[in-house]
Image 1 (cartoon, helix red, strand yellow):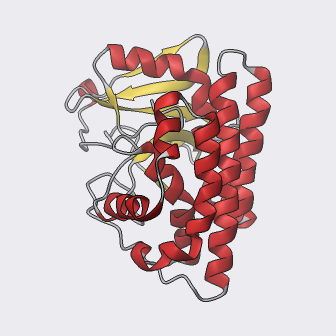
Image 2 (cartoon, helix red, strand yellow; image 1 turned 120 degrees about the vertical axis):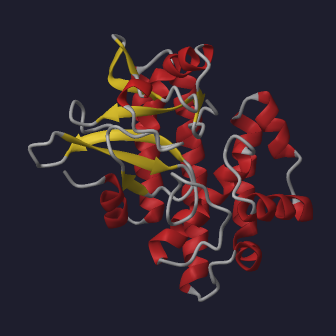
Length: 271
C-alpha cells in the first residue's frame, strides 16, 4: 500500500490540505453525531491550505530559511485567514482566544511554543497556525530548528503522534503500524507491541479496546504511563484519512478519559 505520506508528497502540501478537507466534508454529510467537528475540520483545513499556499510562495521567492523567528513575517498576514475562521466557527473558548491573538503578542506566543517544543495540549491554536509551516518545511527538507524533542516524537519536527493506523505491509507478518505527527504531518512505523509514549513493550501492559459502533477503530493503551493512541485500520477501509476519520469516534476518546488514560496528543477536536 502506498503510504499516506507518499500520497501527500505526490499531491503537494496545499492540495494535501484540500484532500483532508474534502474527506471531512464528505464524512460530515454521512454522520449526524460528528457533523459539527467534521465541518469545523473541513474549514480549518482550507484555512491551513491558504496558509500553505502563502508559505510556499514565500519559499519560492527565496524568503524561507527554516527558522520561525526569521520566517514568520513572510506569512504572518496569511495567519489572519485562519484566525478569522477559528474566531467565527470554533467553540467559545477557542474562538475567544483567536479573537485576541494578534501582533507582537501572537508572534512571541508562536515562537515560544515552537522553540519550547509545545504540543496541542498546551496550545491548540498555535499548533493549528504552525502546521502549514511545518509541512512546507518537511516538503522542502528544511531543518525545523524546533526543540526540545522527546522520545517517541517525530524525528523531523519533534511533534507528538496524534493518530496511528494499520496498513497492509505486503509481508506474511500482517499489517504494519504507523504513527502520524500532529505538526508536520509526517509518518513513521513503530512496532505493534510498543507504547509510542514510554516505549513499554510488555504485552500485558499494552491493552487495546474496540467498540462495535466503530469496528475500524482501536484505543491502544499503556498501563505503565496511562497514555493511549487511537488507531484506524486501513486494511478494512483504505479510503480513510486517519486524522480526519478520527472524528467519527470521539465517544471512544471520552471513554478512555473516563478510564484514566490521556491521549498522547489531542486530535482535531481537542480530545
